Each structure stands twice: as C-alpha cells, then as structure tokens.
Amino acid sequence: MERNVGERTIGVIMNGVTGRMGMNQHLIRSIVAIRQQGGVALPDGSRLLPDPILVGRNEGKLRDLATAHGLARWTTDLDGALANPDDPIYFDAQTTDRRADAVRAAIAAGKHVYCEKPIATELATALDLARLAREAGVKNGVVQDKLWLPGLRKLKRLIDSGFFGRILSVRGEFGYWVFEGDWQAAQRPSWNYRKEDAGGIIVDMLCHWRYVLDRTFGPVRAVSCLGATHIPRRVDEGGHPYDATADDAAYATFEIDGGIIAHINSSWAVRVYRDELFTMQVDGTHGSAVAGLRECKTQHRVNTPKPVWNPDVPNPFNFYEHWQEVPDNEGFDNAFKVQWEMFLKHVACDAPFPYTLLEGAKGVQLAELGLQSWAKRCWLDVPELSV
Image 1 (cartoon, helix red, strand yellow):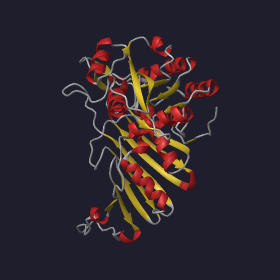
Image 2: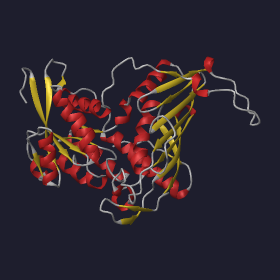
Image 3: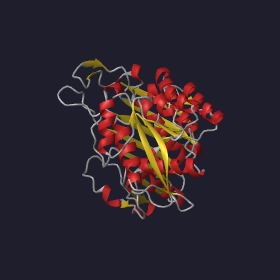
Image 4: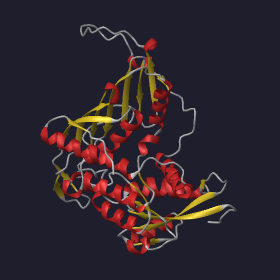
C-alpha cells in the first residue's frame, strides 16, 4: 500500500482472527476497512494506518487470510510477535478460556491491550488483568460494540433529548434458533455449548447487557437470573454428538439506578418473530421506543391509543400504526470499526477511551452474579468495582 504524506503506521498484533468474530468484524470490517480508507485521521492532520500481524495456531488459515486481504505479516509464534517493539498494540479475539494468559503476556511485554469480551471466565481474573494493566501503565480497552449500533444510538439520542420523561422499564429480546448440528449445520461453534470450554449464553451476553444498561440508562444495582439448557444434545463441527453442558438461554431481570426495571431474554433456542435479532423496548411517562440493531420507533403519549380489555370482540386497533420511525440524521459506520478507531487514537494521541479492562471486568461480574443467582434462585446486589 502506497503511503501518503503525513501518514504513519502502528503495528497491531491480532491474535485469534481466524475465528468468526475476529475475522469478520475485527480484521475485515475494522482493520482492513480502516486501511482501505487510508487510516484514521488524527487531530494534527496526519493519518494513522494500522499494520496488523495475524497470530494464531493454524499456519494455513493465517497465510490464506493474510493473502486474501493483502497483508504481509502473520505468525504462529505469539512470543516472537510480543517481542517486536514495532508492534505496540496487542488485540485478543481468542476463545475466552485462552484470553487471560495471552493478555498477561502482552501486558508484561509492555503492549497496549485491546480485547474481546468476556475478558476472562471469572471476576478475580478479570480484575487481576485490569490491575496489571494499570500498574504497567499500558493503555487498555475492551470491545463494547453494541454502544455504536444505529438502533441504540438513536435510542440514546431520545434519552438525551428528554423524550421519555421518567423512564420506567426496559424489555429486551435477543436471540435466534441455533441449529442442533444434526440435519442442519449449527451457526455457532460447539464450544459455546460446553461449560468446560467457557461456553454459555450467560457468560456471553450478560457482559453485553452490563455495558448497554450502564451506559444507556444507569448503573446496574441488582440482578435476578434464571438460566436453562433447552437443547441438551448437539452435534459438533465434525459430526460427533456431544452433551450441551452450558446454558443456551437466560432470563434476567435487573434493577437500575432511578427505579428503572430491565428484563432481557437471551436465547439460542428461540425462533424470531420480531423485526430484528435484538429489540429493546423502553417505556417512560411521556413516551416509548422500540430499538433494534439498526432501526428505532417511537410512540409519544399524545399518539398512544386507548385500548380497553375485551376478549369478546375483535381488536379495533392496528397497534403498529401508532409508532413513528426515528430518522438516521447521521451516518452510521460499523460498530466494531468505530471503537477500533477510538482505541487507535487513544494509543496514538491519548484521545479519551473509557471502555477499559475494568469496564470489561464489570461485565464478567454481572455474568458471574447471574450464574450465582440461577444456582441460588435469588436476587443479588451488584457491588461497586475498583482496582
């Protein structure tokens, strides 16, 4: 790639990018896309171009991936990559059970660390990573991509404008049917359904719901969660049946500052009858909204119909007609790419980046409390965290 005047590069070690999320969202739609646009614009007028080195265990996959996207560097030697001072950033998209050791090694090597969530399989390890990064003085961050989804950005715009009045409740529906793998291949890797491999939807999704709720509505103060393994037997990528030892559904209720009650269902065993794979309804004294991944619809109190419960006559309302679309009013880039650009600028010129490993630890905390709530069948408070 020919460099322009005022352009500088920054080396990025990308570990785990042969997996679905690491390859599609982080490599292709973020780093490669940033390179194709000529880098990230910095405040001084220069541009920062990420120069990735792909790291993994499968030499053939790495070579093919690098070749397909015009990248020159790849290796199966993580220690060797960490030893290169020309690559100051380490990114981790491995499976969760491999993440902590690699992040520790990166911090010890003086790398700035950015990684997927969950950052660890248990809270003590997550807090240890945050502490190590702070003590080493390295910049650090965790992926919190859903904050930049168009639907949630429109929802946040409504909140900031005062549209809702006093927010009363939040109801979220997330999920889809993941095929069992016998007569039709599964859309998710088999490790997701094995507890011994750090699988489970509570560990996966409550980390997301923590930052979505905290940063959209207010701090989560308590949780009650019921998990389930609805599909106890699945078939893996090699056609071998296995026992699903992890939860594939979670039904969680949260208490949020200001008296807001949130309930979110997460399931890999549900068939979709809604506009998008994730929808969130927010009800307030002055209005309501339903946000999806991309769209957001509102109903103000002056447009709210006045139904009366009477099951003996046909419903006289088409309830969908009373909702209005929230316009884009701005361009929305890929959510992962937006946060990558923020982290690159954070490393290069100290631009603000509040989505630290401590924030990632909060997600692990909520997931851990969710599992404990399920086991104990009780409400649990969510304590403040610090390192």
